[in-house]
Image (tube, rainbow, N blue to C red; front, top):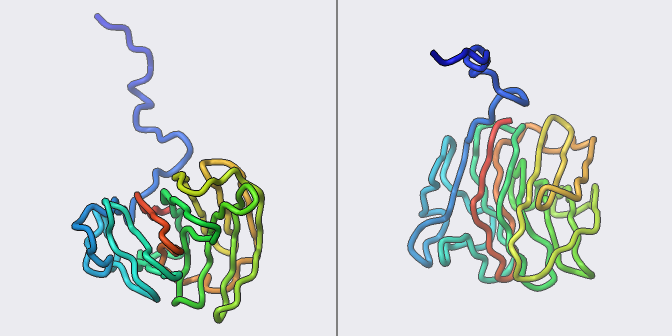
Length: 199
């Protein structure tokens, strides 16, 4: 007879609170050249991809920006979410993930760049004007893939890159109830494994 260690009684307990519910997950697996507006995400509890500006297509099973600074987003139905994506910078522009995207000129952008060793930013964009709300240095190199994460909760926004370099802003009042989230890219940047969860 096997001894009861007591573990069976607590097997249903979730360490760390409520488990996250995946609202959107996309590995961008599709035919090269497919516009994201014609692409279906792996898991999608909201709308399909919407183009706020510019063009993002699938290239080698990643979201790719050929030129410009495009914004694409999905309405996930919730404003308080965690957004994660694998982002590969090229050149010196800043790009990454976007939360609470009303349109191409009103959003919250969690971006990285490879300038002077690299940085992580929280940008508030209102009517096309970007304001840095938090930033820190981070070891970012062009051509290397990084995990960019943003957490939106009420008027609080936090961001990390590869799980570290955390920054935060606690007065995120604009677009606070907007439920579209997505990616903003630049030049020939790539994004992969885009995920939106609640919480």
